[in-house]
Image 1 (tube, one colour):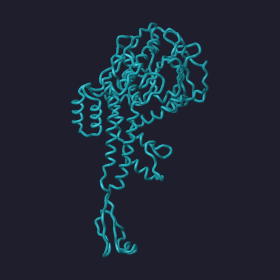
Image 2 (image 1 turned 90 degrees about the vertical axis):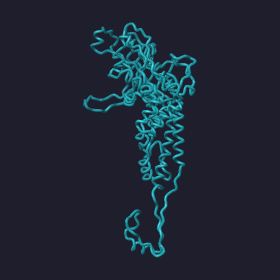
Image 3 (image 1 turned 60 degrees about the horizontal axis):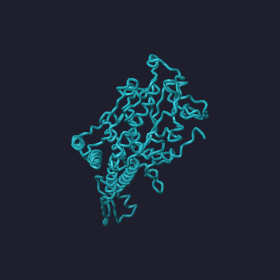
Image 4 (image 1 turned 120 degrees about the vertical axis):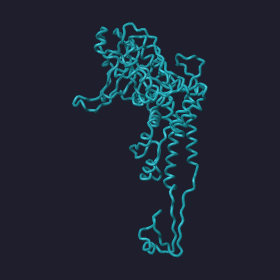
Length: 461
């Protein structure tokens, strides 16, 4: 086995993840020309015509219904602050303001995790502590050296391989960029390496960074220790999914909606080309003049709309023609919009999915939606990471942390279909700005979308 091997689930799953990420990013990703001279989302014409292809792609636009829906659902999840008891735990209270060691607060981490889980259906949270070689430091040393546990997010693409034994990770390989500043502090050159966490034969967790091209040697790792210098018996990483928090690859929640959004775009490309070809007037000319006589009589040819007359001969004539208006393509586009609205509604419909066995803190009889699963899985993962962080930070961990993200995405008296239909109406600019605000306030009085949280999450991605 090589450090560069890929888990078969990773190979298959990342195809769907890439598609969903591209749709979420929008037009720049959807229309990006690949090495074959085409985009991944609109096939080349047959027979091949590169000039025509480039023209129709440039004329077309991608309307990102999926991205708008995701942003608003994530914003709705953070309409209310997460429920937490961290402020009562002095050892972990710092996590509220700085959970990643770089000044990122816990709500930013939670927001980006919910966003990532909604788009890709998979991400990892890893708890790390500065290497101290097993030395137990005083409180003064901890404060002076800033020795704190931190939580780091790894997107699905950065987790290429893993193994599971008895339901627990036995190893996980993480892709990391290592910046090379040996020659120039201003350099942005970096090499991709592999950080490996694994359970060794002694039953404890070890980790090591393997530079690209180097060989992994199990005996070269550093043991992951708690505050007291004892080894961890499990890898302090949890892989979050849209269904549950097992290591298996879950389907991205927005996968079906992204597919329909791409189909809507393809119809838009065809509509744009049809309009460019048939939407302008075509002029037809008949004349009894020969070609040579016509050219002599009309040395500048015929220009549509020119302010001059043309000599057509005694039997000449002309007519104009435009393509008849067709409703087929607009109707097909609107059908795709309706389909996306239905799929958006299914994300928050409590009848659309069965409850998973691994959800915590929810009554077993309570129905859940896909987005509730997404949010609750993130909450569960953060609570577990806080427990690991406390074990690394204090001699006598207390545990029993609470961090729950809001799962009421809309007023329960309003149907999911009405919720997403109204969002779709706003996104399609069917109302002016004042009317949009009025619509949201009247239809969803309990929802105030937290745009700052969404922007922070997008930047984190």
